Length: 321
Image (cartoon, rainbow, N blue to C red; front, side, top):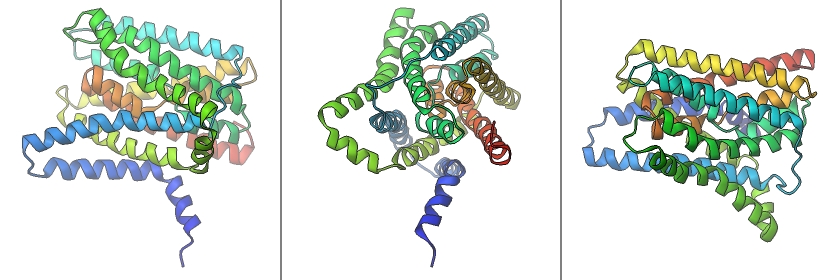
């Protein structure tokens, strides 16, 4: 008889691969079905609503498990924030010079990878497993969400080719991005203060954020495949976007570890700066920028998981990373 715990462990271990395969298969089936334009429009609306809703739910559940009244701020948080903001401004400047060319997609891909908030649950788990400080890392994940919520609406209008004015674009993006990242935090704080029973119930569902993330990743991968198939720029640009996402991933891991090492926090800082919310990357790119840049999120997920797998093997052999 098959042990349920073994099945659960297997699913949790390979859930990224399962989500990617299911997402690719689902889109290929959908793509080859003879559906009417109206039906496809309804499906698109459902997917566009489901992805941010999943992100909001994941953040809320994760924040409920964190005591938001006992956050621990340190100097390396400020160093990472300054580095991230400077990099976002630099990429925005480059993108503004590339407007009107197909290469602007590469700058947009780099921007959404850097601007995405830190992935919440996995960062804390990995940091704690490898001997890092989970409290300071958790604090940085919250700071990262605030940075994205308030600075993405400011910078994206300078990149976007929207016909709206800068002010109109800023307000439009602010209305859609900020609530998605800030509201779950406020909801979690209110729940902790007034409804502790709910928090206790949420804590019992330890794997729920992981499964929600898997569903969101499945939908996001389907979107990525759609943009890959319909990409107007061709295969060379798609390969270049994959390359850009890899370079950004390496840069963020290296810089995070380098900055954190000066404070004795290279594990948490490396994970905090480089482990990005890839579902949010895909949603951000497909919603506000050229859809072709959204495929960077799918590739970034691959690179960061490959790097973390290598780190995991290194830690198992040497006891340090």
